Image (tube, rainbow, N blue to C red; front, side, top):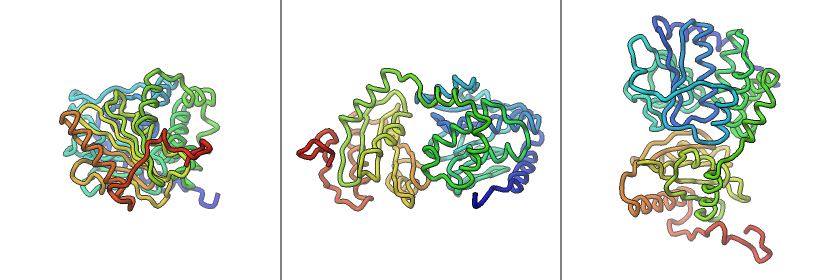
Length: 354
């Protein structure tokens, strides 16, 4: 490779991590809500470092649910033990580490005003982000890559389940190294691959799917509209917030589409996912601008997610969703009254997609 990563800077980070954990009796590693494989694998890698390098016992905590079949399979197949973050976790002597997220973004259950000991993330640093150790690098495609480098620099043995989790975290976050992956992501994946269990990976990537998965897909197909290079889906009420990101990824595969937005109502929020094939799309900035003061959002070049509070009645939420779709079109440079066509009616005389 043209730029083989040096682990000198990672060793310096490990030294700073040891300083940040001084005096801690326990480390609570927190993922973002409804955690994905990148967040989960990163959390377990940091917990492993804490226990085996710094001798501080660690647990992994999350908010929301683990809903996507692949994510549930990953936790089950690899025997990963994690539980919901509760008030009891905020006990004296407990240090906190956040992975793949930062406080105040709206996508996590960590108190925005509380200062964690450690933050490891590949999203842009927020002005309000504070921690004793902030290892934040936007030039990485996955937080799991950053943790892999720290593990390699520590010279600890990497157990097969952890290597398998990290390799899946990297591949899922970068769509098999095809989305926002750089040399470091490729190098980390190649270092993990010989240590990973390929049968476990296969069972994670191709799990059995519940009926609800197909119900959601059917709903998406009937509530998707397109205009030129943009596609938008409104799922309405959903039981699984992960469905929004899944449908956004799925709909972006429609030929000729380069921008996708998916919306879904979960509890008292409208969950929003943005995807683009434009490597210079700045999806995170795009979505923050689109939502404005209506909600919160985060992301990076080609992928972003956010949420808008919506505890109103059904009709009001529907109008807000319609407004968001119009704003999506406007920010792409189209007229607000652009006539979007239902996906299942988009066809040429020969039956092919238009």
